[in-house]
Image (cartoon, rainbow, N blue to C red; front, side, top):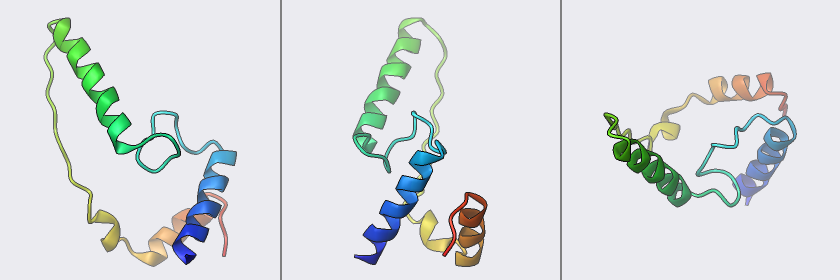
Length: 84
């Protein structure tokens, strides 16, 4: 419950400050990881159709956020205008 409350507050703040680009996916409303894959696939197939060279690197950040220092995260959130 607390995570949902915090997510709502941070999301609203970031939306108001226009801190999230329109290309951001996965953590924004109506833009899932699936829509990200579709947009990516569409872009790549377009380049392949144009006979351009395409290289792809996949990174897995699944557990990356579990290792973030809370003090560093809080400092960065404060720089974005979020306080306690």
